[in-house]
Image (cartoon, rainbow, N blue to C red; front, side, top):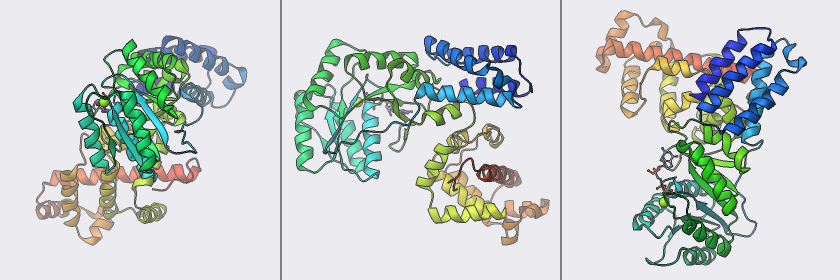
Length: 440
Ligand code: GDP
Ligand code: MG
């Protein structure tokens, strides 16, 4: 993928020591190819490379002691600028209800995103009302109602055949009398952009005057997503874009081009089908993620909202004293389970790609954690504190005691050692102060 390509390019660059203009040109040629292959808009790539080169070939860069680092920093800065310099938020109206209208093609993820947004806002103490304005498919209304039930939030519907404009209008009246401070309108899509769709959306916009019109686009569709965004922005006017299905093997082109092409910021990204799988879009973090510096900040944010604070502080103390034990490892496994898939988490940490490979395709699901738990609980207290004493006969005893094979015990110890290394790495980052406020 894009990240791998760029990382390989920069690794070569780092290995060089002193850089010549040719070195930079060669690296930029590779970056250009990588971006094009990731389906980034051609013109965006051209401008991007031009900007980076201008800055990188400046005398002062090539003369620094660490020119490669400086070039990488420039690429990082420019990638960030490409996606928008700041993180964008939802405009909350000072006069409730705040009306959010979701638009987009069929299958882009509007209805799912409506649920995710409602979930996010509910967690922030809001009282969202979901509005089913996709009247063409009865299943769409049902889909939103199911989400509403899951979230324990109201869903506004009207009888079949009602005009979507009327539904949106009535929903706002309803919200006012039921003290819903947010109204999320889920509109109908079409397979392709057409006049009928645009007319309908414009009519809703004119009538309810949304505070936020957010376009939902599927990241998997690459440049098509960007074209759709351009079209919607010209016709309807957008406040922002939500990029869905970024958890799949989307190539990154859409994330990198949307802002540059349309001027509209990406506000959120969809990272899965579940209601929790919506993340605020941080251009700087996305840039770091693409450059393989990992998305430590996102991970930390996620960890902070999911981890038990007391436990986190406890863990921090242990890290400081370097007394991470197998008991802690087990705790961690249980915490990790709360965060999402281990794969996803490791992908966010710099340099953890290798660990991911080392751990293999171990899926830390319920069953795996139960197995780990059984093995660890079959150890003595002393063994758990100091796994280095686990020789062959102890391992065999533990395997039999926990109903596993010796290989399973070995595998677990290997995983533990990797986790410990990971902890050290995080601790190191904490020390450099680069990630102050980092608590895990
Ligand atoms: P709509 O037609 O625009 O309302 O699209 P839906 O909300 O019905 O979503 C279409 C499909 O995309 C559903 O199967 C969703 O579960 C899926 N989907 C939506 N967002 C995401 C996402 O961020 N990641 C993944 N993997 N699937 C998503
Ligand atoms: Mg829908």
